Image (cartoon, rainbow, N blue to C red; front, side):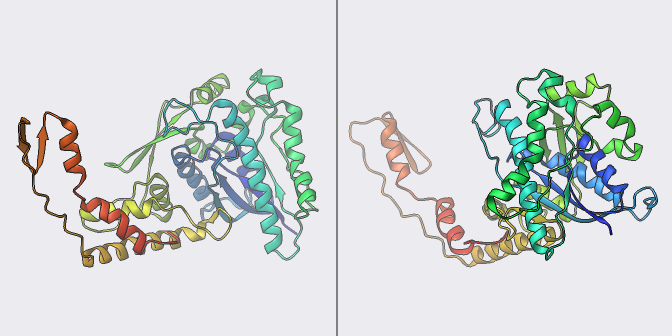
Length: 379
């Protein structure tokens, strides 16, 4: 009987090797990507990198004697962080400080995997609870690294046992077993030395992405502390990683996360871009409690395209309100000049008051089209 294994993969060294380790077993493997930051720019590079690793292990040319495991499902978990501490150094005003980020990384992983395992057990009609593997290393604990922002080795061990406690308290996963950390006693250098050379080009450390629309590239820049970890372990690392967004379901999903879908992607006229932005601003809606199955990416893409096309068709028939003609008042004994159709007076408040009385089409578009035609769409 083959094993059932859940493996969280992020595109980094430890999780990629963890998947390689699982593939050496005769196991059915569920791969899950967990967004621990809640911000797309921190995820898309990892998603693209992870996908290259998945392509390698799903290739027809893969040596099945070396890797008898089978990837049966891939999921993406996009929940917001459990703890969010606002920062003032940019990134949309929602950057977490280091303490919050470290807590989120571990709590988000444990809670998401606990939820996923319970869901898989519920849908498998009583099949035994899947084994969950996590790529934690003892050398990353504060006992070894002396990084007081991180957890101690004992605290990491408590995290591994947490699913048992949570399962029994909630009565939803009473047979749950602790998570396993098979790489715990290894160092980063040892993990790197055992990594399949074919996977080395796909490894990217945790970092931040910037999208370049002209070339459809994602530029991934590793965080400074991650760079230092790789340097200390004598593992090759780049200052920046350039990742191509391909015209696939995952590529569209990445653009959707970045809110960078354009009229070109949908073969629509340029003036449809504003409608695309309206749809892009709608939250992801998925029936499986924030888990998006890889098999649903095509559905989400088609739903998005159809919503935009319906909006575009409706907008072309919509009768926009005509801005009323406002007679320009005569301002006696008040020096002024006329620029366009707005009076600019020495008293700036007069000009502002007059111009604010005139409705614009963009306001009407937001108030009418979005409310009438979007609603609760699964886009």
